[in-house]
Amino acid sequence: MAEIAIPKSFGEALEALVELDDTHVATLMAEVADQAPFLQVAELQRAITSTFAAEDRARADQLIPALIGLRGSLRSSVPVEEMAAMVSRSGDLTLSAEQRERLKSRLLPLLGCAAVASTAAAVELLTQHPRNYQSSRVITDIRPVFGGDPTTPPLGVVVVDTLQFSTWNRDGKHETISVAMDAVDLASLREVIDRALAKTTTVRGMMAAQGLTTFEMDKDA
Image (cartoon, rainbow, N blue to C red):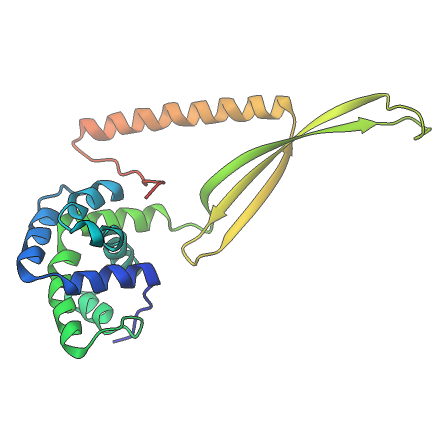
C-alpha cells in the first residue's frame, strides 16, 4: 500500500488523537457517531472540540478537517481499514510503532462513521474542478481620454471596473483571473447571479420535498 502525505496541521491533530486516554476517545467517538450526515465542517468541529481540554483545543480543532480531508483524498473504493493503515504509517507523523497502532485503531471508527464519510464525499464532489471560487473584488479605475495634444487637460474619462476572481484547486494551486467590465456589464452580471440564486433556491426546495439533504461548503472552516 502507498504512503499518504499528511499536512502539518493534520498531523498535529492526529498526534493529539493518539495522546488521548481511552475514556476520552470513547466519548469523542460517540459524539461523532451521533452526528447526522452532510453536516458543515464547523458543526462537526464544534461537536468534538468541546470534548478536549482547553489546552488541546487548538490542535483538536483540526481533527475533523483532517479526517474529512484524508478520507476525501483517498478513493472511495479503498476500504476504511486500508485508509486507517495508510494514514497511521505515514512518515509525516512523529510516532512510535505502538502509537501508530493506536492511531490506526482509533481512526478506523472515525473514518467510517456516517458524518465523516458523507461530508468527505460531498466535499470531494463539490471541489473536483480545475478552479474553485475563493474570493473576488472589483477594482475601479478612472482613465483620462486625451485629445491630440497630451499637454492639455483630458477631454473626459472612462470608468473601468476590473472584476478579479481568486480561485484554487485540490492540488493547492491558486490563480487570479481578471476581467474588465463597465457598469452595464456589472448590471448584467448581477441579473445572471440573481437568476442563479433563484434557480438554486428552487432546486433546494425540490430536493427537500424528496427528503434529500443539500450539502454546502463551509467557506470559513
